[in-house]
Image (cartoon, rainbow, N blue to C red):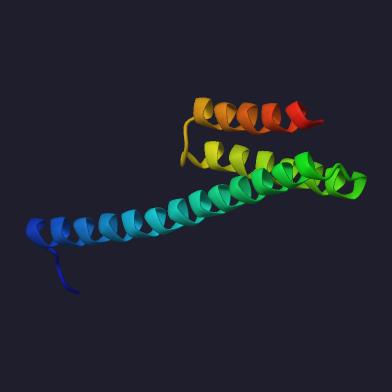
Length: 101
């Protein structure tokens, strides 16, 4: 049976904390990337809809908006972004869509 002294415990704890930070960082970056891409794609679709009013495109935009809202809410629940940032993004994209609707 081996005994672990205080210095070794500290070193092991630091290593574990570092692993946790790296894991969370990767998760956070993935979530942020997904939100940014969804936001950009939805905005692009809305601008296309402004030029060419099409019911099919409108339905696609509504689906994308639902997906974007879901991802924003997920990011807030995971602590990746602040709830006010999420609300601001939702408001801006909805306002843009309603302007051309």
